Image (tube, rainbow over all chains, first blue to last red; front, side, top):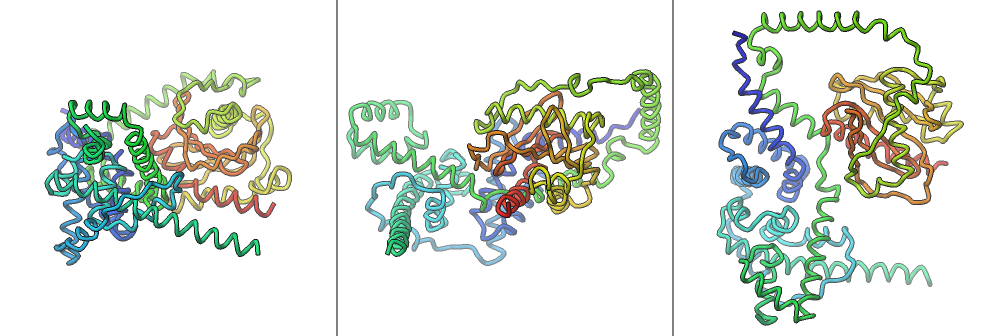
Length: 190
Length: 301
């Protein structure tokens, strides 16, 4: 009698608001490391949530909503890259760089956030994204494999290499940075 | 299992991806091998440093204004611009419901009229807030901070909501001369940050410097999403321990949401009956500008 025809719409929105929207911050963080600048990351996050809202009926309740959203985001991002002609087809160079990192140096003690972020920046994208998804966002190998559409074995090997490269970069950066600092303190003393 | 085997699966162990049996073997090996224990400890530490560096970096922090706009756009996409009409199905039904609501409110006002005439001799004490709630940030559990938070809630209730202050508030300019330069322009900083974040969705109500329970607050009151929101700043009693954390702590008390953070010698509170996420969003939107404002005033002082 009252014509509450759109109440399903309201329920759907409330569901989406409770399940998906709380992950906006985490999703934006991943987007920020995936694309070049803040504006692009905001566009990507916006597209992801618009797409997620549209296909929310496909989301299986009780599963990991953050993983579902991240998968949508990766899918949209590859479409964007393809359109912009930024799709990287050959990743052999990066794989080769990773292969050459045979030596695993000691992890420096008490690293600063600045040192960690600078080292992470220097890890090639295809390894960095897996390190972030596994170590920062704490997704399972299986979830990452689904997001990136690659075999779980590749996730494992890239994570291993990515962590190793991060370690190497971190040692290099920390030594360089501390050496520069020492130099500056030294010149002040003189 | 030997050290070489361990090294090969250390990454999967760290990611908690091993089978139970293999996990058991790793634990057994670690029990007897100090070198691998040390190596694993270093890897764990690096992982924790990475997580905290990425999560805390400004680089990957979302702009609250963007988050708010996104949420509003999505809501509009679902319901259309005038979603109240859509939800209730027809304008006639909505109009009758509206009329019933008006009647109910009017009836409620008449019914409550004798109460509003009663003079409350000690409104501050009778409305005193009793906060005894879980706190999600260890930095904000100091006794002085908890006391300030209670007073801030009392101020929101007695100043912003019911206008029951014992002492007449003074202007922020006057307060700047008497109680610290950070009070000067505090209202401008808050309003500008909110306008930048939420545009015309924020309406300025008042700003002044008021006293409650013996504590003084720079107080800015605004309307956001049809709710009264207080932004309160007070000088810390124990300013020796500087809190450099960027964390914003959230609590609820008496149906109110409280988001608080510290900067320099000041504690800042955002209090309203908005949903928790929206109240936090307001705090996030203004936090950086307020920190800059306080930093600048403390430098000039």
